[in-house]
Length: 131
Image (cartoon, rainbow, N blue to C red):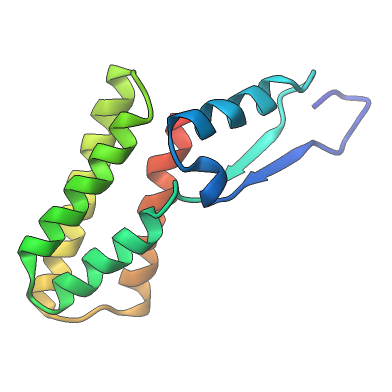
């Protein structure tokens, strides 16, 4: 944003436009095409939000095996989207944190609106660094 233009360009990309390596690259090319760096807002990648909510529901129902399957798939999909060791490390850290939160849901056998919102945030938190 320049001093002469107080209105930044804001770009918002939803989940289907972030559904894998090729789509992330296309989004990155769109962003790079702007003369001035835009403000970029991203949703979770592809089906990540559904998977995260599925894991939270499985944790609430006491099914840790399903939680593990879903968090493993979430990590795999995000790692497959980039060839960057730093991103892979961050993905691992975020999935580990998500797993801890889901273990809390498992132990309590309940999701509050606050815990469900926090769980949902992991989709965007996983996607943003990939761009």
